[in-house]
Amino acid sequence: SALLGLGFCWGLAAPEPRMASSRTSSTATKTKAPDDLVAPVVKKPHIYYGSLEEKERERLAKGESGILGKEGLKAGIEAGNINITSGEVFEIEEHISERQAEVLAEFERRKRARQINVSTDDSEVKACLRALGEPITLFGEGPAERRERLRNILSVVGTDALKKTKKDDEKSKKSKEEYQQTWYHEGPNSLKVARLWIANYSLPRAMKRLEEARLHKEIPETTRTSQMQELHKSLRSLNNFCSQIGDDRPISYCHFSPNSKMLATACWSGLCKLWSVPDCNLLHTLRGHNTNVGAIVFHPKSTVSLDQKDVNLASCAADGSVKLWSLDSDEPVADIEGHTVRVARVMWHPSGRFLGTTCYDRSWRLWDLEAQEEILHQEGHSMGVYDIAFHQDGSLAGTGGLDAFGRVWDLRTGRCIMFLEGHLKEIYGINFSPNGYHIATGSGDNTCKVWDLRQRRCVYTIPAHQNLVTGVKFEPIHGNFLLTGAYDNTAKIWTHPGWSPLKTLAGHEGKVMGLDISSDGQLIATCSYDRTFKLWMAE
Image 1 (spheres, rainbow, N blue to C red):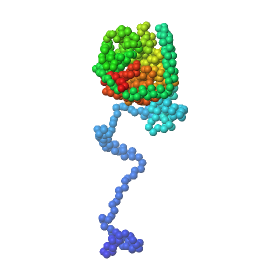
Image 2 (cartoon, rainbow, N blue to C red; image 1 turned 45 degrees about the vertical axis):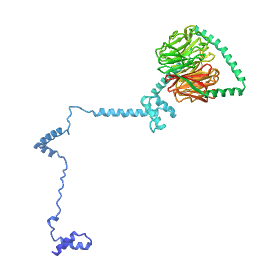
Image 3 (cartoon, rainbow, N blue to C red; image 1 turned 135 degrees about the vertical axis):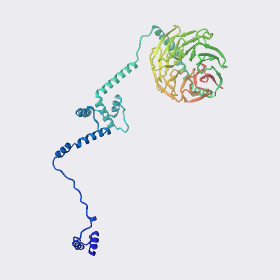
Image 4 (tube, one colour; image 1 turned 180 degrees about the vertical axis):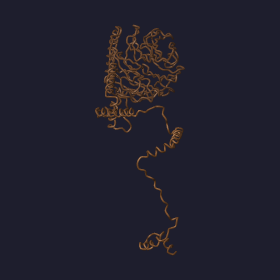
């Protein structure tokens, strides 16, 4: 027993010394190990060599798998694990052929892409992408990626697409050039007679103006400077001495009579009114328009040498009507028919024989009131024509359009002699200076530009107002100052030359829509959206 216990203990202990284990092994082999220490026999799987055909035949002959197979098939169908088709067949060969075709087409496209030459100029690449209607750049895309994208697009649509777009662009450019070309057509004989008459009228006036300029130049510089300083001092002391409610709708235009004793106002109610100056009493109410009146102007000889029964005033309205008025009647003397859309402004030629009208049909017209006919229907603006002014000599006409461009026309030849390009928005006012060579234009870009006819360019841009400029007017005797009015509720006076601000005429509660300076230069009138007109005079 001692040996058995020793042998058991040694059997469980770790075999440290080799000699001790060898001694005990001889003793342990003589005794039998207990049952719980015997290791279980592991069943090894049978490995069959050869075919199982014989076994399968035996099992099928017994009928085991037939029943089990049918039941398993039914269970699989019911569970949805086995799908039995109704004769539909998926042709693997056709699917493979489609895939092959796609792969081949892709290889062909890549081959074409390698053969396409694309410009290395990035600007040309962008132009080609734009012509094809593609984005010219993508986020994070560099010039190399852009060229590759263009090459891939051309490999799909073909290089002919780019050629077609280029041809279309060339055609559109040609059509635009043809549209922009100046063309002439034969006018009536009355226009030729009028041009000759205007030339004979304007040349002596031009000679007289130049002679006066020479005489003015002979005045000593100190005398001229002192006179200008006195004028500036009086302008700085301008104050509002009369304010009158003109109507129950906004007043769109005002104009002094040639003798400075009357003021005509045009209103959105369709009424035109004549007021006495300077006490602002209502003299006449002219009824004839049915809609907004755009302008009313006195004949150049009205209240001076013209009879009251003759045509003394002309007015225009938004419905295209142009009416002529006398001073002894409240109804129009005559209507000028021919306009179908809005007439924005009307202006007399200095001679008083012709009347100019601007229209929203992109044209302006000249009417001969002696012959009682339209002698000129002048196009040239790409949008509606808003304002018109005549040169003091009567030789030129200036027009300002809603296309942001102005044009100066020679009435003796019919040519456009100067193109006023520079404003960013519509031109709402144009006026000639009495010196004969300066033109002022007021625009919706809040600026007033001064142009020189001799240099044919803009000589100064006045950042005049904080809103669109509705009117510009030079002092009518010598042009010593410039008056501007705007939608910022103010009118401003600027020196000429120099174009520095002298005085701001603030007082209106609404937009300043019209302004004028009396022929003697002593009075300034402004009319506003607040339904009032105001007279300004130096103290």
